Image 1 (spheres, helix red, strand yellow):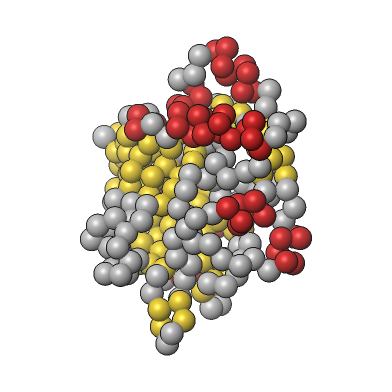
Image 2: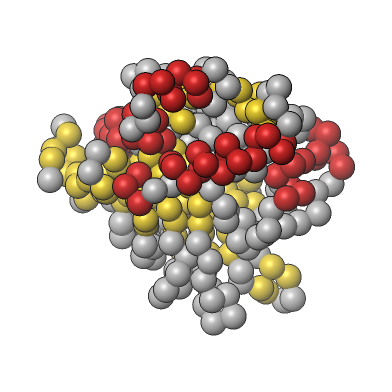
Length: 283
């Protein structure tokens, strides 16, 4: 246990993340929220349990981190709260209320944009009693554990990030993407080794769903990408979050990968509210 200013925190895993105790986000002052944000920047991921938040209160929390980001698809945003996207397998009147299995597979959010989101935040509304964990891989620790020679090799590579490729190759949560959305999200190129703007620590910012590296064919890129994904998602680099109703989980997309896990959606309902905060261009 440690205390950062007035915060009581516990590491999520050695050297990564914090669970922040005794903060009621619905009633937190601006000063308290600023401390929560500061802890997030320091550790890469934060958890606050036992929260009860209206959409307005969740939105206020997100705005403490910066300007909220819109969504590539707006099919399941909350009425009157377009910044909040619903993830759910619940069906009402024959229609789904949220996107189901939307985050399965190791990735970072909005990596296919010129300025990917800084952070993702999820608020647990309904949680299955088993399954549906969220895994976060610490890419700074994964990069630091590489031999220096390998770090230098990887630092020379740039990766193509493609929404069209992602949409066409995902196995879970696949959906038809309108042509105008594809046109609005052309391919972008980002460095494979990313520098965190807060303290210049390096992260191995690999993506599993891309055409490959600049100057390489997809066939040449795929085995290297697979090798790196296997490296960065070793248990020693991964935090597994087991959800409880009222959890708020925030992770830093600039220095991590994440994935959801499956659950028995024939027996259980899962519902989350998701927000994104704008980021900057990777360098």
